[in-house]
Image 1 (cartoon, rainbow, N blue to C red):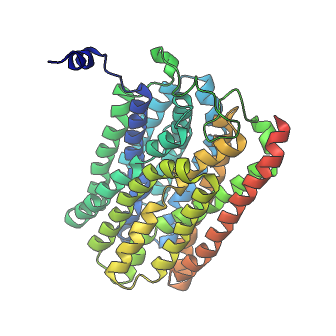
Image 2 (cartoon, rainbow, N blue to C red; image 1 turned 90 degrees about the vertical axis):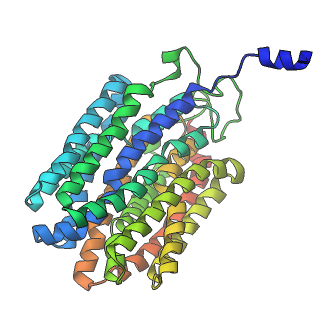
Length: 425
């Protein structure tokens, strides 16, 4: 053996930075959270038939769930800073698991609403706010990439669970399907909390990734001490409200579409199995899109990435309206999946880039309220439009116009930030 070979063998192997394991833990959390967030559409028709309610009434569950989440969100950023971060995660995990199982006990519509409200109260303790705060704590460099990967898990779980739930519903009942997916949910959220997630680098005697590197002001990965405004300062800017308006409309359109895709395709004459398969394709490419999003931000830049992903979203709505054949349905599923990172991959980066890190968790939790307001209105709105007009088509047409408006709001927010935020720091 040569001297160089011996020297290479004796060199210490470089360890993987533990923050990437935290990212994997966040992916597992998102695997769990994707189950209730994306699988309920497969229950819409069978539950409506059993409970004797309309699609609009079924979709009202989202109003109760998201209303409770909205009431909690303004406090979460402060709570995660003030109280035990890990205990809040555990409280969210236990209570949401209970709520998931209780869906199988529903006998009347108000039971469904009550358990949805219970889920909504505690889901914020596991969802976007703590995940965004974890990646912000562990990464100064590569934060956009780490955040996009951390939010990627939800699509994978929905890809698996939606067809599984459909088979169980057809073979047994929707109650049995809820019990099975509640157990799957519990496994996904408990495992990372027990074995993987550490709250901050100092808990392990480490520093955040890239913390010692000097970074340019205004970059995607800014130093916490170097740039940013407080929540109170942000509230007095048009930048904050432009971002908030875009988040509200994104939640309205995205979830107003996603939660009605399976019944829409079923109405067009496709089998429930094919509709569930198409939904799984969306979730598969959702994962691809979310992981790719961080890389695209690094390579293409902030504005081009934002306009590109909303451009894809606009195209997806057009293809959905033309879904008259199976190839077109699959094409829609691929495009929709690639842009699904809008809801969780875009806004952590947007808020960090335009409002900074100083009170990132608090600002993020406050703005996320507006996203949930949009979701809570959008999901039942699509059902109400269907009940009133007998078709989802008017909703898809309106949503296409709204998507174009959202893209304009983000461009305007970027321009306003350059004037408003820099003047306040």
